[in-house]
Amino acid sequence: MTVIVTSKAAPKEVEKDASMLKQKQMMAAHYDRLTSAPETGAKVASTFVPGNLNELLMCFDLVNNLPEVNAIQSGLRRQSGAYVLEAEKIGHSEDVCTYVKSDIGMMAKGNIGPNGKRLPNPDVLLLAYTGCFTFMKWFELLREQYKCETIMLHTPYLGDGRMTANMTEYMVKQLKQEVIPKLERVSGVKFDIDRLREYLKKSAEAEEDLVHVLQSAKHRPSPIDAYFGGIYYIGPIFGAFRGTQDAIDYYRFLRQEVDDRLARGEGPVTPEGEMGKETYRLVVEGPPNYTNFRQFWKMFYDEGAVVVASSYTKVGGVYDLGFRHDPDKPLETLAEYCLGVYTNRSLPMRIDMLARYIEEYQADGLLINSIKSCNSFSAGQLLIMREVEKRSGKPAAFIESDLVDPRYFSAANIKNRLESYFQMIEQKRAGARSAA
Ligand code: SF4
Image (cartoon, rainbow, N blue to C red):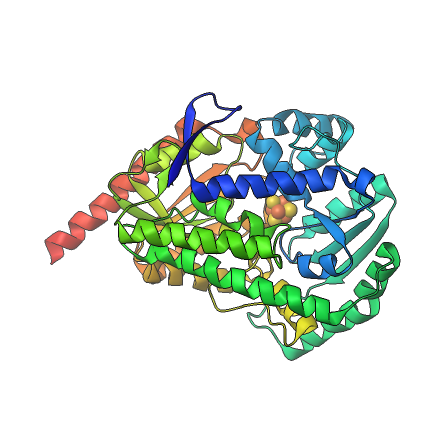
């Protein structure tokens, strides 16, 4: 079922799946829970999406606040440009990740969340460091600002491409000796491992349905767009809902919706309705641009291009390669989750994943959206492009934009490059036909 809604930011009518509306309501309820914390007395933990330990935080009745998600919300609402400028005025350089600058600028301007209310100061900062150095610098800035307890869970980088028992043990030791005692102290709640097991069981159930949804894109036509639409799908599980009944209900609902589309042979729903004929199937590497999100998406669906798999929808957990949270080994599973997120994977692991996606999802090629201020994703992307191209024999292309800084979204440049890329795919197809 699709529903027409009118968005405040874009006066034109926007079509949304029923699941998208449900997701929006969940996110709104979460922001209300956060901003009402001073009245309800709830304590707040700031943490990052990759490696977020939502099940553990819930064991201490802590409400999870994710600075990157706040920056994304500011980007979608076209507020991030002013926040980024504010942060630059305070002295943060042009090259700093714009999620950070949007967050710092938002704090400087009163820290008003997407529901128009002030976001509470965190009681604790929990950093499960997963591969991106910026996370550490970002929390240093937040610690200076809030002067609250800061907990660092160090996740070893999968530099040589594998997870070892030593790595898991090292992380479990930190959880037992550092993280849990500090969370007990801040929250005043005693840790109960059976409570954690219950949440983990719920996580695994939702993860199963999410994977089903993502893998539905292996069909032709794909019933979903796994990048633009995928961003809606990952919202609850990458944020404050993993481990909750709400997440189970949402992913069951979404799965049914996608299965229905599949049964009817339909493609994805775009903001302008049904996508129409599927002409190109792409794998995309890199985060999207949020300040011009709809305009960016339109450049794809206008050409019949659907994204069948993306690395960005794996930043908060790589589930489609088999990982599920396991209630039978509660602390080890948290460690393995953090170790396996996309930002903690080495370049060869990322190349393997993308080449595998091209094959399994029968994609026409790889498109890289290189984000100017995200070093974690951008480092090595040219190498990734060349390698994936070599292995898959499919053409790859490179576009550039930014996360939430509108100064770095050049619509004409991106459109030109996309059009040339689609021509390249056509030539490749024509070559294959004449060789057959
Ligand atoms: S992964 Fe990229 S976008 Fe995320 S914090 Fe690091 S630099 Fe910023």
